[in-house]
Length: 371
View 1 (cartoon, rainbow, N blue to C red):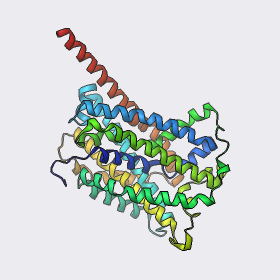
View 2 (cartoon, rainbow, N blue to C red):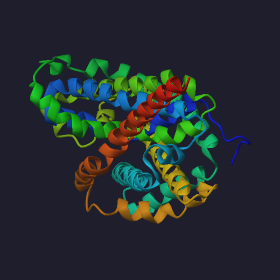
View 3 (cartoon, one colour):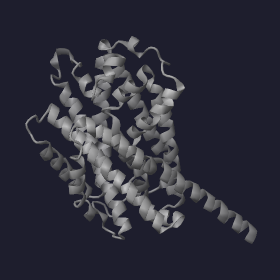
View 4 (cartoon, rainbow, N blue to C red):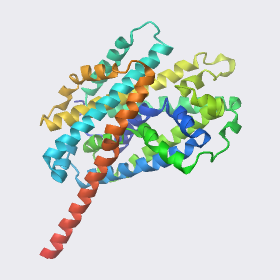
């Protein structure tokens, strides 16, 4: 490990969650929203974001209540070890699957736009090996990396957004309330996939120095994700229109082709967007490998969980190659999210928090009766 105490700040933990979430759905979310709800996609995005804040609040409060304990010990104390093992195995599978699908999408994007003749297997192995190496350096190195890369993501995106304004047709944003309430409700589960990564707080917050003051950072990270998702949706919708956006596989990458800087200051804008995507995808994969190795290590009662990172490489590699093409990747993602993601991101954190609250109230009443 890099540091002596292996601790991170609340901001660093929130940034790790932020990068993990952004790496999952940022490329395809605008087209998904346009396909399901048209110009009303922003409504589902705001509602889903508000729902995502609920488990974030619960996880933050739970980890504050049990400061200094990891997710395995907390879960064992609340629901018993048998259910804890089952639950954490499901979550570990979810994390590995999420990392595998992000890796596959990363490989497809790199092959399509940059390394045309390079086998996708080589691209996938390269990024997984790099992520494993970073994970073995410890969470402090990962946390510092997550902070350092933020300006390299946010600043270029803001500049590109400003340059795009003359080419946007804001009439494409109308009508604002096109979809029915039933359509909006049906769209929430698929959109929630783009907020996958909330459950990683169960791992990160164990390493924070002062979890009691983490709430504002964690909620702030989700709010920033919502704002960036809304910005990407409005920009792509204004540029391509409802029907054009629904046909795009990766609208943000297509959007980069429409950007032209004055006096050819930057000739290849696609390269800038690709660089941002590489950073986000790498951070997501890094987080999934680290968190999965930590959970597996805790279940095996091994102190140095980083040694599990390398054995996870072939698992992620083979899972990433299961879908025959990129379209099937997103089909697998939807199925995987319904089966494992809902439990990992919503049901499990809510269950633990409710049991913890009830247990605290029971202990308080018991103390009152004793007095």
